[in-house]
Amino acid sequence: PLALDRPSGDPPIGVLVVAGVESELLDVRTTLTTLAEQSALAVERFSLSQEINRQDSEAYFRTLVQNTSDVILILDAGERVRYASSSAVPVLGYPTLEGRRLTDLVPPEDSQTVVRMLADMRAHGWKDRREHWRVLRSDQTRIEVEVRCSDLREEPTVGGLVLTLRDVTERRQLERELTHRAFYDSLTGLANRVLFEDRTGHALTRGRREGSVVGVLFVDVDDFKVINDTLGHGVGDELLVAVSLRLSTTIRASDTAARIGGDEFAMLTGDSMSPRDVETFADHVIEAFREPFKLTSGMVNVSVSVGIATTEDSDDAAELFAHSDLALYSAKTAGKGQWRRYKPELQTNLIERHKLQESLDATNVETSFAVRYQPIVELPTSNLVGFEALVRWPHSTRGVVLPEQFIALAEESGQIVPLGAWVLGQATSDAAGWRREGARRAYEDDLPPAPLYVSVNVSARQFRDAGFVDMARRALESSGIGPETLVLELTESVLMSRGDNVLECMKELTDLGIRIAIDDFGTGYSSLSYLREFPIKILKIDKSFIDGLGVSNQQYALIEGIVNIAETLGIAVIAEGIENTMQRDLLASMGCPLGQGYLFAQPMNSTDAESLVHSSQRLGLL
Image 1 (cartoon, rainbow, N blue to C red):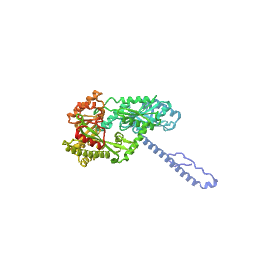
Image 2: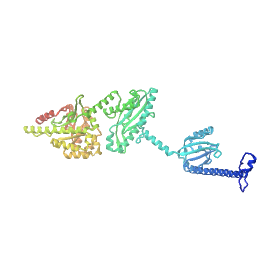
Image 3: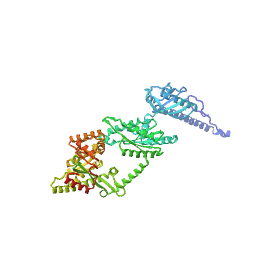
Image 4: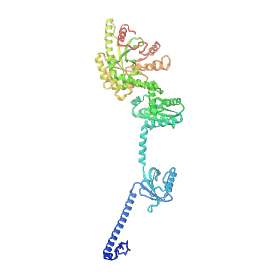
């Protein structure tokens, strides 16, 4: 017998059986007894070790359960909490959970789902199942938890369903934020380009299945850069948010509005019966912007230009988007607050524009361009007072390329800076020749020389160049003309860029004696405050206003008002685009002093301009 010498007199714990010849076994009996005693000690030590390990393991796991951040619940057969780990207090806020129904811990709308899940666990005996639940804290705050469910009803030490709840509220919120950032614009909350293209693809698939028309509208805020520069980027962002809200009110729940970037938006509309329905929708979008926006800086009026492409043009999402972008370019070229629909020739025009850009990049400014001069006259007397220098591009294969075709390209590429410098140098050089010849003729005829000047257009890109003032100074020095002979014409967009030291640059030019003129006044965000804030000496009224003279009383009153205000401020006014004597006479009658246009002369080369100077010097008339 495997017996131990215990005071308690415990029975033997086992038996050592040895088989063999009896006579031989008798000889080793003492040895076998000793072996049995040693075996008993070994078995006892093993049993004690197992018990110690079991107790240590239980203590270890009890410590883990009590200190884990996860909540561990054991449910009885009635779905009540029989056991809750101590972590339930900080996570759920209840001082005790024992005896509570599990359904009391979830929102009412989720209780049926939880009940069904627990029933499935009991019916199928799943050892492991993972769920995502919403749980109510004691203060009724909702948190999100990952739930691991285990059926341990057969385990004697557990005897129930075990739920392990992990609070993932912050993690899920972060996941949602990251997802939102990936698919939505952070400023406006609209869909971004990625989500827009994805939804366009789904809409095209549905449209092919249902036979409906899908339309993509590319929307751009007209003159947004002007507002952004004049009122500040904060107001610009506020306007973009307001625009996004305005666009959102024009769409149906099944449509999508997205911000593509900057001031560009896109709209997706499906389920249309024909392309005309999409065009009607574009009319609706443009009409929505008739109402001004009320911003923190005040009321702001903006319009939008819209490009349209439909599945009649393409059933590919990327191509549809590109087509609407082309149509938008066409709409902005046509003017503000308009829409244009994609046409195949737009693609041809784009290719042609690209070729023109390549040709422009390859040209030599001094040998490829020419300067033409249009006379500026006194309206009451028709006396010649100066010329406006106009750049032309006589192309070897295209013929004469007009400024409206290449100036924008030159600005985009930066070539407008060397081109503008060349025009300024050429114009001042020609003006020096006219003045010398005019002075000589005046001396021969014993007449005072006419104070002729030359007016040169300056683009916004050219004016912002750091070396522009020095370039103007060098043009005066190299030509030898006085600064009063030179007028620089700026567009209103230059005045909008107040953050670019515009006023400082203008003052440097006027300190040199150069006069500043504002060209095309009235076509942009005109403000009479500019006439007071900036050192402006000449105001040029755009041809579009002159065209309405004799047709619209309002147009007449508007021009007359501008002329009167300018006269009060000591600013000369030039009316552009005068084409008939009626326009000239009406302008003269309201006191407009100067004008130019085809009525007097078309743009001419330097030689013809010099001949005109000679006749004007001698006759005083054109």
